[in-house]
Image (tube, rainbow, N blue to C red):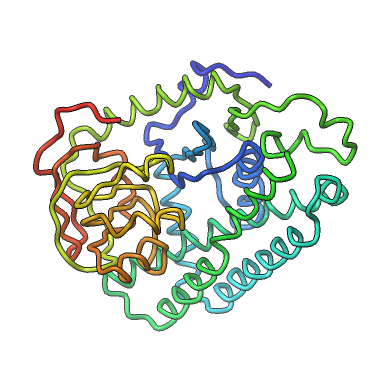
Length: 356
């Protein structure tokens, strides 16, 4: 069903934000879009009026209402805070699904192998994302609660097992991405996958994106996706332009000052220089070879055991995680002060130069 960008803009909640920026294929984005609208609602009661996965240069940004997302995190987080059985259940389920996917990929290497069981794989991938994101979001909610003084032993225990489950499953996402690409299905939407290989002969479109608005599904063309992303980025820039300071959680103590290097695409990693303040949505293993150069790390996302936190402690780099909005507030070349002890990053001087 077609929808124009003008219609999408009209339906956007005023507090929309982009979250969970990843290197994701068309196929995965279409699966995650359906998961958010259907599986997360059925399993955990999620109710998002807007659910948009927007792709650009293989980077996917997930746009949601901040209010709705925070409500979801608080509702599930409170349930998990004192319920060890629930925390154990969703953590063990996520681990079991991780093992299932890794075993499937190992033993079904060809497109033909995949298509024989494509529907069950896609169905489980939708369910997997519902658990994957919920474990991560609730783990961060509990971490923030503990850092704010909550000493409840159930909360501490549940946070630990959620973080361990997240760490266990994190790498299966890029593993599935690589698998989809290897079998040549990465640029198809999930509803286009059929066990009859003759239906896959049509040319796939690499730049498409997916959106659910009020439980109606739409697929956006590459051109429409690029135009919409420009509009949303401009709106977000206006929303965050007056903010001079962000606050997050301390992943590793220390202070540092320097120029911001904003990395939202992996291709920009090689532009990092000694002493830069790395600002990114989150770090992944691709960052390992570059991370030693930076003076500090600042991320939108992350919990105590996230990749950025582990790297920061390993190399003793000041690190502030879970700011929610760092990549929206800071721009390339901004001079900033990072006080990781207090989880605060402050703009000293805005950059007057346009950076790539």
